[in-house]
Length: 128
Image: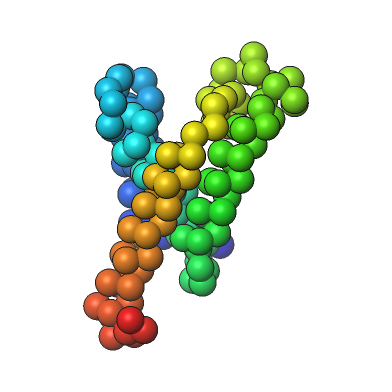
């Protein structure tokens, strides 16, 4: 495992932004939508920060993961596992399914795919 400090710093900044949004933002756009777009990017920076090699289709894998977590909310997995009273776990898992969240995850995924292609093109490895 080789740590990529640039991605770790990006992860920590995004984590701080997500925590700030979760604790202090009560609006109709940033908290429900931007936060969900950023969560996929947050996970991406974490994986890229701690995994030394390139993972093909990483944004897609993260989209699937986020969507599975959202689907678990539909089935009230926190209640089934009797974790509804654990504030940390129930916050991470979430408590209510919303298809708009899946579209936010998709938006974050598409942004990451564009980002990867821009980086690939900038480094002369164009596959666009």
